[in-house]
Image (cartoon, rainbow, N blue to C red; front, side):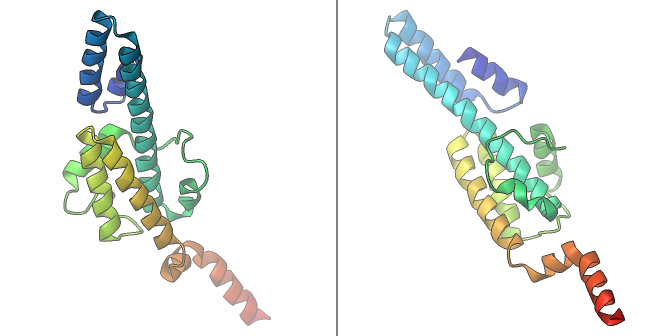
Length: 173
C-alpha cells in the first residue's frame, strides 16, 4: 500500500484519500485486526490502479482531440500504457491557462460538451474522486468516438489528399 501511494505521488496524483486509508490500515494493524488492514491495503492498491487507468484514458482522449487520425487508440485495450507528450502536470497547467477554451485549446474536434466533460474529469481527478473521473472520462471517450465516426467534415479534413487524388484521377480518365 505504501508503494502504491509512493507511485501515485511520483505521478503527482492526489493521494489524500489513500493516505487516510493507510492511516486506518496502520491503526487496524496496531489493534491486530490483520484482515481489515489487508482489506484496506487492497483498496488502496485498487484506487491506485484506477487512478493510473483514468490518467491513461485522459491522455488518450486529449491525443484524439488534437489528432483525430489517432482515433484507434480509444478502441480496443485502453488499459495498456499510452505514451503521450502530455503529463498530468501539463494537463493541470493547460487547464489553468485555457479555462475558457477547454483543455485542448485549439482542437480539431471542438465540441463544447467534450471539452466540458474533459475539464470536469480533470477537476474530479484532482479532488481524488477517481470514480467520478472514470465515469466522466468514459463519457468523453464515447462522445469523441461518436464525433469522429460519421462526421463528414472531419472525413474531408483527414482524407483530403486522397479525395483530391481520386477526383484528379477521375477527371483524367
